Length: 317
Image (cartoon, rainbow, N blue to C red):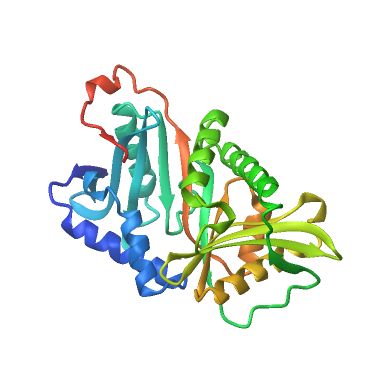
């Protein structure tokens, strides 16, 4: 029988959690400094998590970590970790832990539940919507050829049109993934672009590219160098719809890899939004590892309980 006991001291669980994250980052090709920076981001707020020991007839079989926070005025839950040790997998403990986490969050008023998968989870979260994947690969010089395209710096005259298109695409990706409503996605887009490129095309440590083939513009790229130590983050490597299916997507990736190396970084990282299977397949075929996949599930109100009955939830930073 699977049972759950909330821990008063999470020290040993946290050490193991951090060890597993470091191992997954190293396997994806991140250097030590980049892995530590990723670890800090992933573990932000971990002190607020409730961690439960999972046992079966008195034997420890794993742990599950949960938290409820306020996000945009709404209570949301998060499964920060769900781990069953190897000798005890496949016996129903994973599903029991997931169900316990869903109930725990719903009891505290959460109306949506998020989880970030960093290890293979089988079909455990198949009913959750995929919001996005974080992928990365170590870039080894020299990258492949561009195969018929050229990549040049974006001009000031091209920037306003690019920015409007990039915002619209970002909003559409967020809405398609199910992460936010259209109105919330617009506000997030405005905030994010203002924070990321406050000086527009002149924002330091950013590369803005235009891809051309036979003299025709067929895409664009936006990369942030030093996003993590030694890591460039590809905010966008985009091929216009009418030019897709011609191998230009891979060529755009190569252009991003070249820009990464030129900036002195050694790894390239991307987020792929849920619902974009074409991009996911491209990244898989080109060797980009998934180091985190975000998923979400809507929760029904727990019978007889309300958020007011559970004032201990925490506000998101």
